[in-house]
Image (cartoon, rainbow, N blue to C red; front, side, top):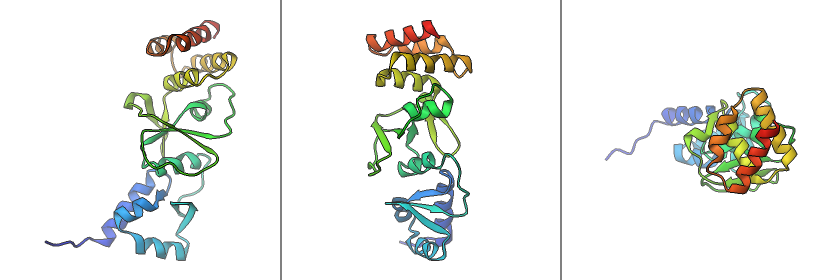
Length: 196
């Protein structure tokens, strides 16, 4: 049985996977693609940099304002989404000014990062949308998440009013989606819709 692997093909695969997340990738991915030697060379010549424990980045990608979201998405191999307060900020909903990056992930090893809040839950495809180098919860899912998280009623009303005003979602969508929530949370959303 031939166990030959083409190092150039492995390197190409690693680069394609890193491209999905603005050049970020994990050491787990390096091991899976068998590119350890190439990464050691890249660390020596500066074409790859360490950005955290278990996280690296190809330096050819320019820095961007949303890099932190792409980096954490890479940590979870793309199986996580920016959610809650952080998603509201990205969608332009309310003035929550999150101090942490909020991500929702079904599984995967949790990183040790003081500025990161990870909520363990599986999201369905209809609950997320692409933001280029990471996923973000849809505006409707974000509104539901914030209502469930228990933000103040005034803040929730502002989030809902913004979602309606900039047409990120319709009141009927929120009402319909709220039907699956606990009664107290659904009532909070109905109050927010009535005031919006």
